Image (cartoon, rainbow, N blue to C red; front, top):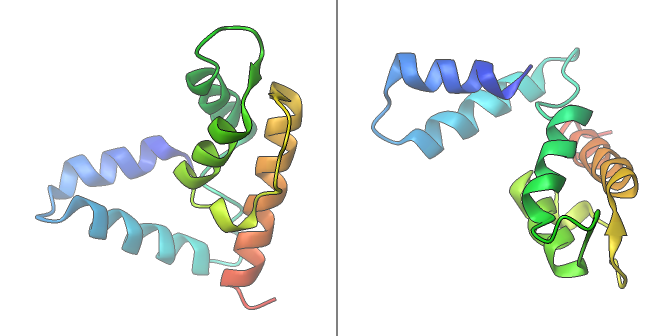
Length: 107
């Protein structure tokens, strides 16, 4: 499932509470056994770019934690003490998302 699908559903439905609508939609998707994550590697690379405000190819630990919160994986992310490069960020984000999904599914 790609974020564009969620955007399309949101635009088509025009719910009174968009946040609640999206959360319910995501929960339904997550209950599907074929569901992996709404965030793919390209999405995570894009997210990294948003936080790499200096364009140096690294983000700070605070930016890392904020990015994890943005994808709903704040409690699943490692405690990072040093600046982090893009490929490492993507790998850690995917690991955190996998852990979160396993918990949601009760595994």
